[in-house]
Image 1 (cartoon, rainbow, N blue to C red):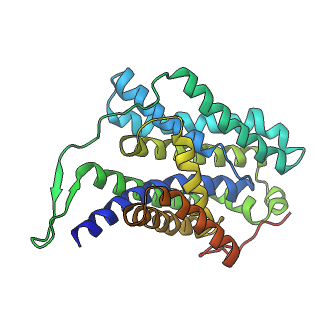
Image 2 (cartoon, one colour; image 1 turned 180 degrees about the horizontal axis):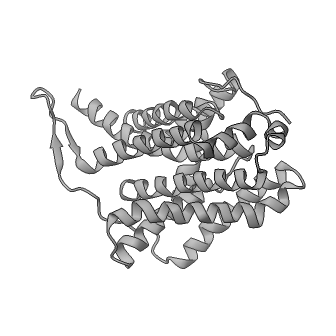
Image 3 (spheres, one colour; image 1 turned 60 degrees about the vertical axis):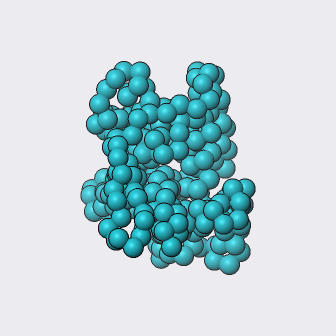
Length: 294
């Protein structure tokens, strides 16, 4: 029983990171209709930004959790403005393919810049928290609590921003009816830039949270874009609340598969899950009623 609880606690931490990575992925798709496969690269840049801020510059953790996501968000918005916006005039497929190559190019550039394959940063908190029950010999690290609670809180804040604040109103309008939003006076370039900035900032923050738990490596881009995509498919590609459930469900399945079957079963389980969802319920577990209209 104690072993299962420890596995579920680890899965909760992983699920919080997956959900945070996925919600930025979904925000961009929901507002612009673009499946951004460079999202994992932005997560990776957040992790490397945390390494640069904490290790190379010796700055406090508060900088890593505030400034780094903002810089990644600006980079994402600039990428959309300079590289992807001209391609959007052709067709959406060109934009999606451009994000694939952009993500791969970013990974390889980082690999060239850092000869060390795996980097690390110190945890925010040291020490363990003992089990509240005397019957269960379960210990939880303070770092795991911080990552789990912090990532989930960020996801909830992002949902509030998208659904309640004026900046999210334009994104929702674009998602609901593109032409109608234009007729109502919403600026397409500004709305797209805001969506990419928000999605990029969430990706950067996911990278900062993932850095102590998963390590800092160029392969972190793949390690986060795959579960973000799978969580989005499970929850419903346009459902912000659905990706939370999708991220945690995926993390639990991966963790249990790795523990009770084999480590190779972890990746296989995620792909089997996404194929099953696409075959049985392609709209996801929590599809939204609203659909984009041209």
